[in-house]
Length: 143
Image (cartoon, rainbow, N blue to C red; front, side, top):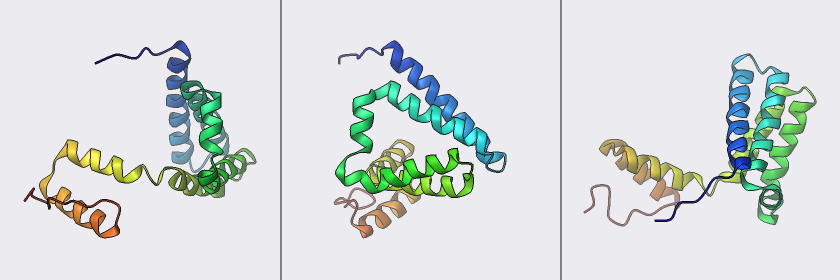
């Protein structure tokens, strides 16, 4: 197994994203404080840019199939910066769901496979397979 090296820019990006999430969390906890939310949004986007690079960030947000999600997300960021925090965070949340909707089923199945709670795993397998996102061919008990 080969190990990849983490550059100094990526380390800075992880720190920026951590502080961005911290400020977003406290901005929401302090009744949608617009300054904390704006600072958190700026740090989060800057951290993402430091981690994956400017070109990859731009290509991620401006893909044709992700245009709607990107416009809602970046529109929400701009509304937060214009001191409309509640509407901006709602738009950001909707844009985030649109941007990462193909990733959610994979993340849920990863978490459930690592936790391995029998009843909960069986219930989620039935719901997810019923929605057409994932088909469990073995059944809930592996039969």
